[in-house]
Amino acid sequence: MEVRHHSHTARKKWTHYFWEFLMLFLAVTLGFFVENQREHYIEKKRENQYVAQLYKELKFDTLAFSEMSGVMQQQLKYYDSVSLLFQQQVSFTDDEFVRIARNLLEYYNPWNISTTFQQMKSAGSLRYIHNVDLSAALSDYYDIHIPKLLTFFGYINEKVHTQIEPFFANHFDLSVTQFFFVSKPDTLSLPANLRYYDRTENSDLLIKNYYKLYYNGVHFICHGVIKYVKEKAIELIKDLQKEYHLK
View 1 (cartoon, rainbow, N blue to C red):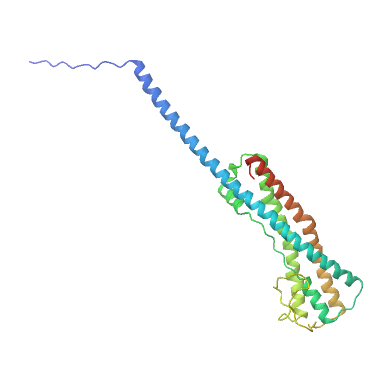
View 2 (cartoon, helix red, strand yellow):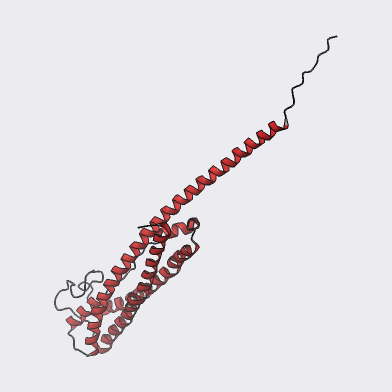
């Protein structure tokens, strides 16, 4: 009977296994390193994109606040001159009183852009802002200061909608003293001989008081709230410039 002999392969040295392990370890480590660098690059790119957009929107905010403040100051000057006449008990004809009341009516809607911050907040992307103090300042601006500003504007708008507009509807002909007409004081295109219906001393006093409350709110927003929020926006712009070398 023929006997078969099994051939034996030579056993590999331990060094061979060591080098195989080392090469595998290096390959895995390098893969992790490359992936980490790629994620870091992507996050840095996104951070710069978000910051550039925040920077742009904050600059828009400061411009919008300046323009609105200018309009408010102009209207406050007109109110101051009219209120002085009111205090002197100057007698106005129906036509004169209606024109004054209509010229005092102004609508203010705050302009600001919070799009980028809200996107970052909802997507959890605020982590891209690695400067903790800067991130906190952004949150304060968009989550505290801007809502406060909107609240104060809501207050004066509520005065218009619940007090001044109903007074107009009760005493003036709205076909000739329309609400929504944007222009500066004393330049409204109103016809001659405007009527003031159901006029009494009490009705005159009522609309004067309505406007006093309204312009007290306008004055507070113009010289207090908008000024403060604008300063916060400017501080954020400077912080972003310093942190990200923006121009």
